[in-house]
Image (cartoon, rainbow, N blue to C red; front, side, top):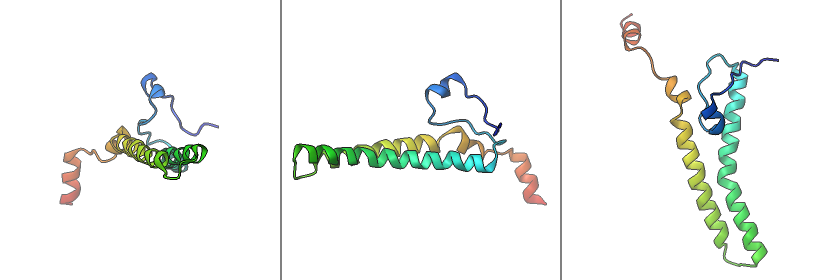
Length: 108
């Protein structure tokens, strides 16, 4: 079953943070792409803190030093990924229109 996915260029296979905008994708497929992105960012923010909490528990540290470091690192990692995704070609490509067409639409 072909769901409209195109193979990615070599660079984007190595760095899949910002896949290209594919307007011919089915809306459900596009929604699944965004759900995956949202869960990835949530995981990037939460997992380092949970691992830090586990390290604190394993070492018997009463003050959650590694948990705080993990949650801070997760926040930085998640926000960095979010900024990269917001500046991706997909989100910029949707708002760029031909100025002449836009002026004609507003006049009529």
